[in-house]
Image 1 (cartoon, rainbow, N blue to C red):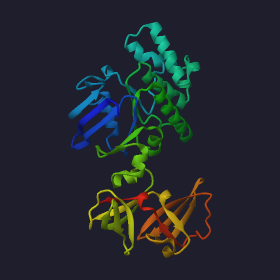
Image 2 (cartoon, one colour):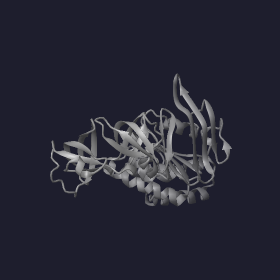
Image 3 (cartoon, rainbow, N blue to C red):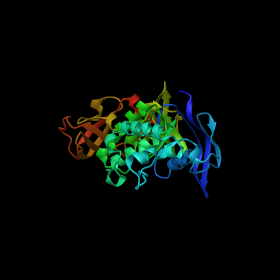
Image 4 (cartoon, rainbow, N blue to C red):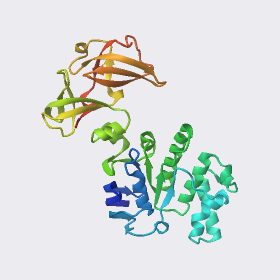
Length: 359
């Protein structure tokens, strides 16, 4: 990774007896797009507030461009911030809102006007400079807020659920715009969200937190394909977690005995022989067939189909296997002959498509 633009070292913050951020360490490189991802109450927004200077940490260090921020007030940190609800001044025009951070920095009129035009052009709002905020759509207002966060050319922009107030279609369109804008400007962005799909769409890396602690950091593909623990596997997309006990570990493959006695294999993640684990496997990585399990080969499990649900681009099959419920996704164009509720099926996966995670 390039030299960090932002670096958090063992940052802590409590509210009364609740530890909202608990020893969090994270680095964001210059020009990198990182999403801070976690459920409600995990400490995401508190972390953003600590970086921005809206809150003070109880301990640890926050560095920006080689400067220890310490007690530096928010307005001196030079960080752009975009909130879920655009914070625009209603009595100012779009151009005046975008230029407000420059006015506060006493930038001259001519230079300010050039910067405003450039920032509005970046977000495709050049023709709306004289409009008032109450005449804008939700997406336009958020673009104005983004332009205001970028106009003074910060090295870091913080995005706090920036697309959460938009409808689904506009939110998905804005994801692409955000990513393209970040790549054009080269400004580092830290995007706080609980939306896994949104984080995967925009991020170079994702940092997943739970109860104020960092659980895993990596590329979206790495975290989805190889979650480090049960929490990350459950949080990032849909995941089957089939309980069992580790019978053996051989060449990075764990052999797991499931309820009922069947032996299956999955990638080892540090499980202990004799210990409990779950087989973590994504629904789209499962193979299912309307045949007996022994016909499918080693590692196949007998299953009973409980439900078939058409979801447009795929069909969701809910099965019962190894004493638990298992979800399978098949392309909508795949044949479904013999896939009716109550049917006996065979279920299997490739060992490298699943992980044995300790519990």
